[in-house]
Length: 357
Image (cartoon, rainbow, N blue to C red; front, side, top):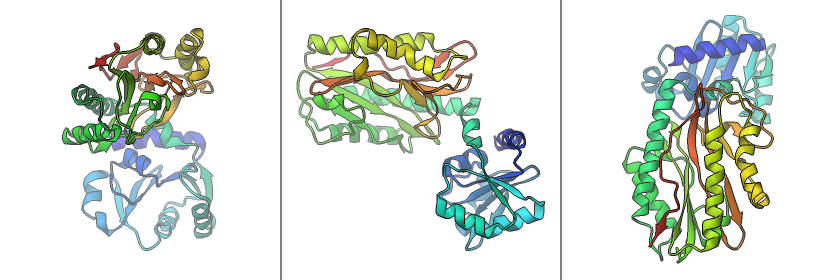
């Protein structure tokens, strides 16, 4: 795993004119090295790979960061980095500009005289956009667990339950079936609160004849799933049925036509244009989807502004919605992977309007 990823990173480094890169963000460090500890830095040169960490990980680091040279750093890790750079004659060091605060950058500038610090341009994130077979296997398992959670919670939701109690039931189910945690704070938004796109579960009691929007995911073996389904408790009105059918049509249309070679903006328009056709365009205020992987929000984006070209191996969500203040909202979301010929849908929960008595 690490050998291939390091080789790909070295190629990007060479193309960008960088001699080496220092990686400190937790997710990127794990992606490149396999190390899951809470502290450490990865230094990649064209000839060597290092994992610098502290004494707590003497055993764990060599077990996880296979083929990496493990360096137990001193009180200030950047001093050890300086020594390694000198050993290799490196005068230019790329760093993760999106993960380094100004005070840290200033300290590094002072501690590394004669070294040019160069923003990396999110090189590791570019690699992470394209999932390999091992990653896709884990992501499928994470998606399967989300589907199982939805099936489970349908038998639990009842009028009079707190949203927060439903969320707890879901999170316990995911963890008891192999998840490390939920991918993010579970959203259970009922009634008028379902019009909140990110209505994290509250103490509101589930009522009768209203939407319940469930947005959740399993964080499983380092990867996230992300699933949204909206159900009705009680008897749906014509308005409930109308906006649900529009969102479903928009989502199915997008799933049918997303393919490699189109941009994130074009993918977004597939769902957005359907909703706008019915006069609800102003009530769909977020992007149609986002990248998914080791983090719940990654590149690429399916949004009005995204010119990223969808490429086989990219994993994204497809999640159009309509949100009517004072009434409620609907979102339907699946996780997909871009293939050579179209897409593969990772999540499989039913999407017809589910009515709970």
